[in-house]
Length: 97
Image (cartoon, rainbow, N blue to C red):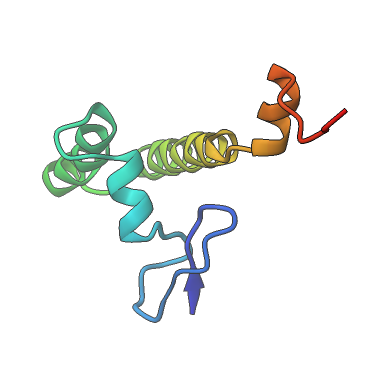
């Protein structure tokens, strides 16, 4: 079974998808339809269909994939709100005194 490439995600697949996979929830969040990222992703496969998977194209694809996963992980880390930290920033405490 292969885990989702996003840190902390417990989604898994049993399909033969290679060594890297992003679950549908994270895929839609980080590569929405008609976005530049999704267009770039599909362009690799369109070009490979026309010209084949050369070593250069494979290297470019994996560099793109690693960048995509790194950016998605960075967003996921900063997306988590820590309410205690926010309350401390604004001076909102539960102290009665």
